[in-house]
Length: 464
Image (cartoon, rainbow, N blue to C red; front, side, top):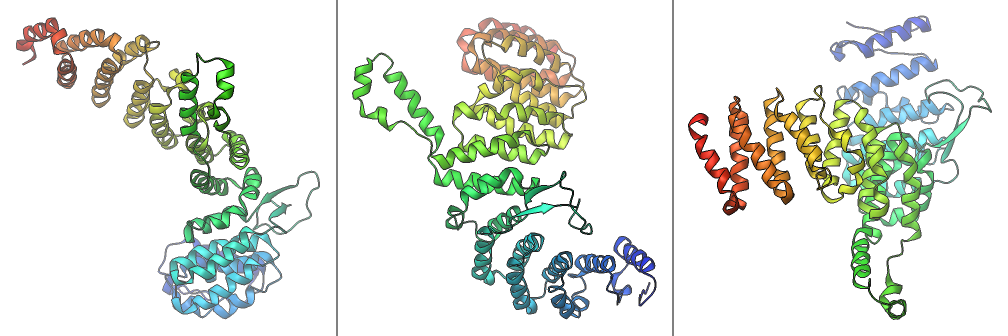
């Protein structure tokens, strides 16, 4: 298929370009030569070149002078598209041209062009890491951007033709922030000094950044907070120890104690981060909620970290892939902070429609949350799971009963008796798993379970 478009009607040209972009043919047989200034056609040509620039480098190199002229185009979308195509050409010989284009684009009046300059930084760095120092200068410049960081939107998409904005339906959002932080994380994540000067600005604009930009910024700020602020976890532990030690002391003795004045006081910038990320727990984007949850887990005091539990449980209504990631994180959190998820115990009950991987994670969480108050309810739930047709899950339920018996001594005998009853089960997998769990339990307290050992001995013939 050889397609050469010269000067037909615009509609035909657009249709041909859409076909070239959409169909899967050998690109060497379809090299469109478009000689039209129509904006829609330029946009499609740039999309085509971005898709195939790496595969057809020779063809793309022939167009470099065209891209350089397009970088001066009055239309911001043409300038941004030209920069994207130029940065997609993976040929070392044009690195100086790309570097110059990125520098000029980083000073462009359009925030959309500056956003694309931030994206181009990552591409150029992967092509030529030796440009790192010059790219850091551009990143620093974009991080300091104050003039037009907030872009007023009057159209639905950056690709839409400019139209008169509706004064009753306008909003502003930081268009550059997420992209430049992503470039920072890729090129120079160790240059924390670049963040010091812009930390408060990033915290304050976080609520208005687009969703995926929020994820990148939150991850970066989490890393920043963990290295620059005092850990509230250690201070919480020290405070608990101090309160316990001085419980019986008089007020006068405590007032004289110099340690009273050394108790933890959160840094205002630390508090700013925690306060400004809290509203994002209501985000519709699961990745944003997870990012905030991880931030609270690492840098929030124990007394405040619990607010993320409700939002994480809300995500369990999402698709299976999201559920799996959320449950993995909850399983980790519930080991150290059971109190966060105890009010939502029933949210982790297994459903018959859950896939095995989801069932197993829920079972692990229920085991982590088990305590003297809820163990009776959980054991009844586990007994139901043992009857499941999913034998892998049934075996996991038996293991969960064993862990509960080990962790909560009050129910050890009850669990052992229940496990011995399972030895009469017709399913070989259930019987085998029960024997393994009983063996582990008896090894810990063999002297106190002589009757159970005798009972198992009587069942030996029927089991074998």
